[in-house]
Amino acid sequence: MLKPITAFWWLVLASGALAQPQPGQAPRIPEGVKVERNLVYARAGSKDLLLDLYLPERAAGRRPVILWVHGGAWRGGNKENSPAIRQSGRGYAVASINYRLSPEAIFPAQIEDSKAAVRWLRANAGKYNLDPNRLGAWGSSAGGHLVALLGASGGVPDLEGALGNRKYSSRVQAVVDFFGPTDFLEIGKFPSKIAHYAADSPESQLLGGPVLENKEKARRANPITYISKDDPPFLIMHGDQDQSVPLNQSELLTEALKKAGIEVTFEVVRGAGHGFGGPQINASVDAFFDKHLKDGAKK
Image (cartoon, rainbow, N blue to C red; front, side, top):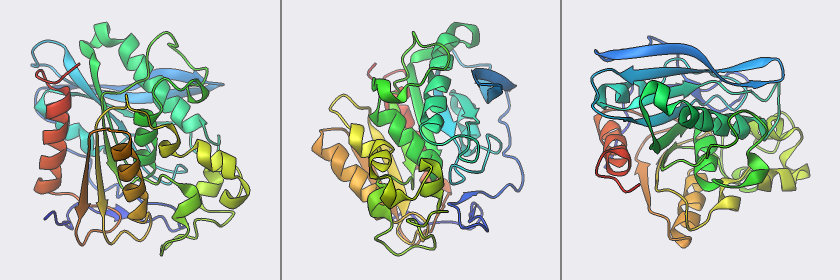
């Protein structure tokens, strides 16, 4: 049974938003890892979209890649202090991205940016010695929602956007979703610290209007809408005491993936709220990415 630890916890925003990482100390960069900071992966109007790239210098051959997408209710957070940085010490290149937040651009800007980052990584695979065929995505909370969308909507033109490197694929080969929202039309039916259907809720701000008055937009933002039999494997983890994103959101996604025949592992973290960490959590993530992205994985 997985248990939460207090050393890795999440701050619920005072505004009532979904959780984002507590800033605290920056994660340690593993020895032998080179960092390329503030690389421009796309330009949205006058805004540069930036990522940080962590490159293990001693890795043999082309490095598999993990894309980290931060949480923060789609209206806060940034690419700093990513828990995925640890993976660069295990032979993975790690890309941690910023994306447009809801105060500056409503959905689908956030998934368009995430897809543009995947395409940029493929377009620049030769320059940074990346393996374009072994690219996974990992996110928490709002970031979990976005990586679930990345996994489910590969090849869906409606969400690709018009940003750079369009000749490259935005598909990913593995997804790790930590407590991400999925079905905005269902999320408000369960106990929560957040009034998810309110006009100023994170989901309503993302959609550009109250959730229940924008049902088609909510459907469009739901990863479950796009699930098909060619989607990548998923690892979904969620605390059973989460008072921000109900456990039901991950249950719905898991059920839909299983129905489509997608390989999915769903781990409920007993006693955990909106955030968790520790050796057991790390071990699950490590084993999942190693299975699907390391040298012996199917391509």
